Amino acid sequence: MKAGKRDVYRIRKKTGFVFQNYNLFANKTALDPELVGEVLNVMKDLAKSGITMIVVTHEMSFAESVANEVIFMDGGVVEKGTPKEIFSRPKDPRTELFLRWIIRKDYDYVI
Image (cartoon, helix red, strand yellow):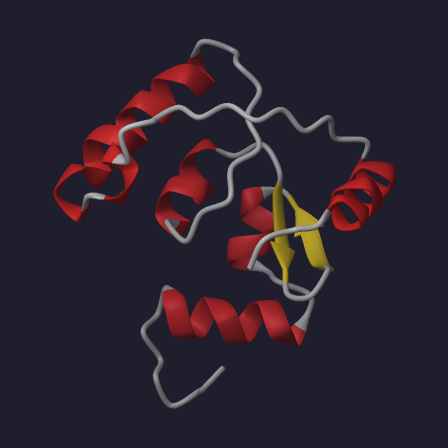
């Protein structure tokens, strides 16, 4: 799903984020499952160097280890907090359900 200009404006207004379109991997390397680890390592190095990034990912272990703040969205912002807050003590049932399904592979809960 692609965010429209109104969606981006609304998110910017609520969060104060400035969106910049950086295409880190123009040749679609990031989409190659065999190179995911390499791509994540490059992004970790960028984060360690102090570069601010807004990353949309399904790589939860990556988000947990690199992020300063995590925002879980489902049709809008559901919950936001530190990685420890979101991954260890989610407050919203929707976040908990997602984490059970994605991280814990608890497939009894269908999203």
